[in-house]
Image (cartoon, rainbow, N blue to C red):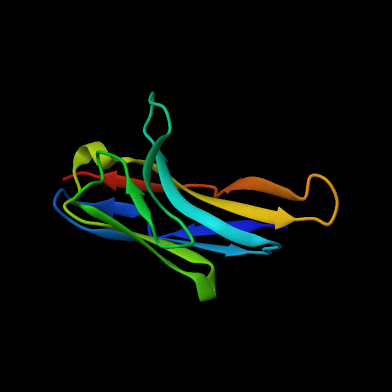
Length: 125
């Protein structure tokens, strides 16, 4: 069974930094895209950043220029370095992993999304 364990959240002052980690285990198949989403109270979940197996990255507008996503394929782990944090970055941050499994019979290939339990990031003075 696929499990995602997130760590690194916490309380930080405005302008500070945090580094989130998400380690995936129980993987059967191939991990393609790994990413981070966030959800603030009363708001929809939004993309922060994601990274493909070919290291192509994509950032949400709020993360551009301040956050950096990376991955360690040997450890099945994705990281999010967050710098210059602002109070509006306060949210629960969720890790998402996309796994592709192949089969000898139909449907031959299936993609599945997995989510972590979330880690709270609070930016406040």
